[in-house]
Image (cartoon, rainbow, N blue to C red; front, side, top):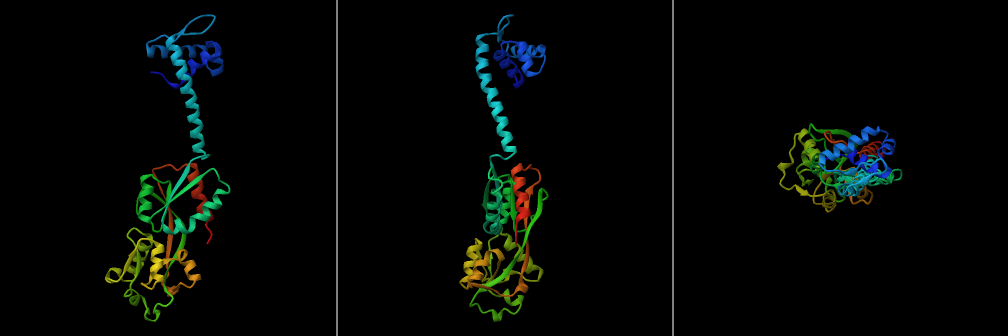
Length: 296
C-alpha cells in the first residue's frame, strides 16, 4: 500500500510547503518526490494533494494520511533509537544461567566489579543445576550459561571458565581411620547431589574411572542443593565430594575436614553459548569480562 519513504516524502512536502523544498531537504530530485506521492495515490486509488502552483492543498484523505503518517514517522525514528540503544547496550538486560557453584560463589563479586564500568548493563542470574543451564541456553531464555560439566551438544560453543577441585570431606568427629582407601570410602554413606548436577556427574565419572559404582551402596543419600549436602555432611550423615568454594567457610569454622587431598577431583567449569544465536554487545562484553577477571 505504502512504505516509509513514500510517507516521509508526503509529510515533507506538506511541512515544507512544496515539492521542490521537500526534494532539497530529502536530498533527492523533485521528480523523485513527485513519483513517491503519485505512486502512493495510485496504490490507494485516492487523491491526496490538490496540485497548485502557489500552495499545497490536502484533500480530506490527505489530511487523514498526514496526521497518521506523522505519528508513524515519529515512531519509526523512536524505534531506530531504541534499537541502537539495545545494540550498544545502553539499556536492557544480560541474562545468565549458572549452576550452583558459579552462581552462588563466583558471580556476585564479578558482577559488582563489572558494574563499576558498565552501570548501564543490567545482569540477571538464574541458578539451577547444570542440565537445566544447558536447556536454558539452547531455548534462548538466557544469553549464555556456566556449567559444572562439559555438555555434549554440537550447537554449543564451549569455553573454559575456571578450574576448581571437589574435596572429599566429612564431619569433624567422623571415624576417618576406617577410610583407608577408595574401596573403603565407597562403602560409607555418600552424600550426593541430585540428577543433573555437575558435581554429581563429575564425581560419578571419577569413581567409574577408578572401578567403583556408587549405586552399589544403598546407604547413599541424595540432596537437592550444595548447602543441604554440606549440612548433611556436617551432621555426620556421611562423606561426600563438594566444591572447594562451597566448603571454604565450613573448613575455617572447623565444621568439617578434608579426609585426604589425594581424593581431590579436578573439575573444569565452562561458559556455554548457543552457536546459532547472536549475542548482544552487552552479553559479549560481560562474558569477556568474567572470563578474564575471575581471581583464584
